[in-house]
Image (cartoon, rainbow, N blue to C red; front, side, top):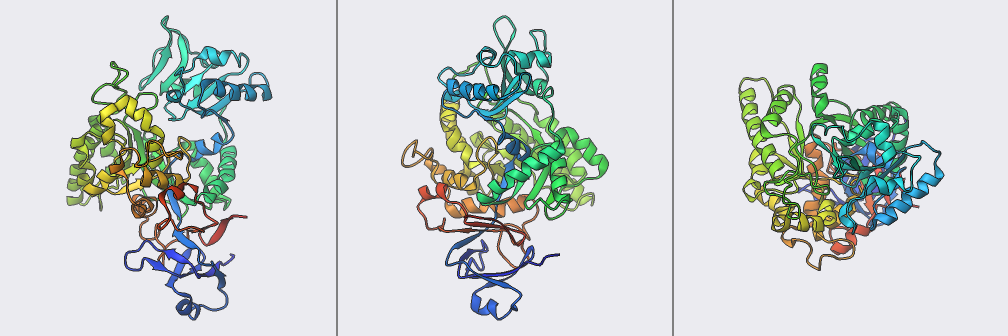
Amino acid sequence: MQVYKQLLYNAKIYTLDAQQPIVSAIAIENDRIRAIGNKETLGSSFDNSFAQIDLQQKVVLPGLIDAHIHLEKYAHNLQKVNCETSTLAECLQRVAKQVFLSTPGEWILGHGWNQNDWEKGFGSRFDLDSISPLHPVYLTAKSLHAAWVNSLALQVSGISAQTSDPPGGKIGRLENGEPNGILYESAMELVADAIPRATPKLTAQAIKEALPQLWSMGLTGAHDFDQKLCFQALQLLREDGDLQFRVLKSIPLENIHQAVDLGLKTGFGDDFLRIGSIKAFADGALGPRTAALFQPYANDPENRGMLLLDAEEIYEYGKIAVENGLSLAIHAIGDRANHEVLNAYAQIRQLEESLLETGQINTIGRHRIEHVQLLHPEDAPRLAELEILASMQPIHATSDMYMADTNWQERAAYSYAWKTQLGYGARLVFGSDAPVESPNPFLGLHAAVTRQRADGSPGKYGWYPEQKINIQEAIQAYTIGAAYAAGSEKYQGKLLPGYYSDLIVLESDPFSSEPEELRDMSPTATMVAGRWVYQKE
């Protein structure tokens, strides 16, 4: 086995440890940090087998962790039509180009549209029919909670006016009951199931090709929320030694009984691939207006969204999970959905206390709410009180702010409330939800610190500026917070002896740079397990 021994020196190294926050040198042996300090003390402690690397006063941070990503979808979406456009017409032009390059009958796949950005609003199947009568088309929304399809895709999937809405989903319809080409939530699967499936091998290759992009952004690990195919692909990469990226892999709720039958527990695995939480959905999303609300959407007075799981249902699943050593990660965006999840978690905490007393479990679970986008003010303190992790994506706030203002109006003041959660004592865990947003963590850091878009909108102080957090708090959410959520805080998220040798090197110092400079930062080099996996040319 090749040995990686390195002494990095002449650098400003942020350890993220309160006792020794900044050092100038770090000794690395293979996948672990041996020592930290300065070159004078470390240089005399290690022999010449350690390669000495002068970092020329660059800045070093622990590798950043995306705590909510869809690796399979992100990797495959790099090969799809990019539908994130400012007009519906431009989206159709991009799809038409792909149609021209494809053979008749071949599926046209795309991702990223957002009807809220289009003057016309939602597209229809007829729009797609006009450019693609001979190719079935399936385009997922930016939120991943809706899909836009053409008539051929509906025909191939057997969807007609007589098709009933599936549980937890809705087929968009014309006045005569015929499908209009928009599918919401679980109704998306009616067409998705007809698309030829990628194999684990092809998915593994797609992820392998995507990893250099993630390394170049400063990511050394992630918490993945895709399903079986992604898990199979990750295992193939791990077996071949190609998974130079630390992944915490969730288990879909529909597989909870299989996981229990196999005896899988949260934390099982190795340094590169471990089992995470049971992932469930309590509601939909803001974009397609399926996030579950107490009061209707401001511009859709009959719509309160879609509650997919209530507190009682969540508790029943949660009981199975905690009794079998599995933690929970529950998607909740609307205030009603978050309320139901918190009510369930309150019951689950009571159950865990009784299980601890009887010795049936050794510790309580590190349960999470994914997104926590809109909370009723009375629910805001409850994550901290229940020790529930706030797994949030700061880039969602700047991406969604105009939608939130339109759909939630004054309620938007209680949304994406990072500072409020920190104030109550909740633990923040940051990610991107890629491919819903870019996985670039520096875009997330910029959003967290400024609450502004790249063009400076909505103004110099940002959107609801009272919710801005400082750079220390934001970086900790991408490192210490994410490591804690994974149960790996004793060897990930900091640069200390015994910790993983996962780090990034930067030309600029995010702690002293102007906030607007954050979004343009990128590493000059990234290390995972002692190997330089990325170096900028």
